[in-house]
Image (cartoon, rainbow, N blue to C red; front, side, top):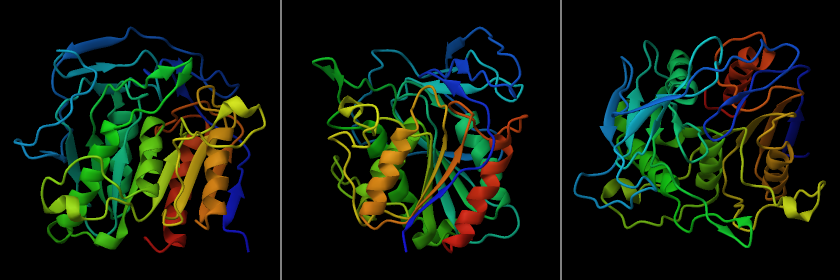
Length: 335
């Protein structure tokens, strides 16, 4: 029996596109596009009530700095409205953090690390971060939102985009997974049931975490001796996977994408009309995982654009994908 399950629901969702998520998909079921001024100010992103924000690395650990120049950390809002509300970002992050949310009531021992997107330029901290945790803790799981180092420029050589040799966000994600495993008993977590969900750039990082245990930084402490590979992976509108130089119908991966048979069970979420990351991006990744013997499920919608978050709208995907994630977690024994 094939390990690759392909499910396409009938309708779709909302999208916001661009590294700064400035576009909203123009679908027949979506409200008219509303553009608001982009605002940015210096300031450290603060977690909403209920979250405990903690440094990711010991203060004494030297960290490679992102491409921030001498700018202080900033916060701001995008130019598009999602679900009738603004969405907010953090950027110029030089000292990453992890914000922990504990379940209220029953704790089933499962945990989820959340990696927001933002094109490796900003981090959509509410739309693809804390709002995801609001749902996660309602399911009896522990949730951790990662504020990883950004921005990081992906260089171009002979007109082609290249992956940075050291990906700062991946280092931060691996460190966060190690901390969750090291502190599992104090957080009420089963270390065998810690997974990750990522959106756009964050989804790319989750795919990286899934396929390697190699770190590009020296161990800081005991947390870095834990496995950085998630026990399950949820990849929402991923990018930077497909080698599109091979022709329109190619499903070959970029040369920097590695696939491991040790990758965890993976669920992929995507819209067929995503204007930022074509549907062949997740299809190529899913097929490569399946060829390696990794169980893969896909939930695809005909429409929806990019970055649909979890805010209820008239578009079905915004209401349906959380339930599909919950069922999938039951299916793989995590709930």
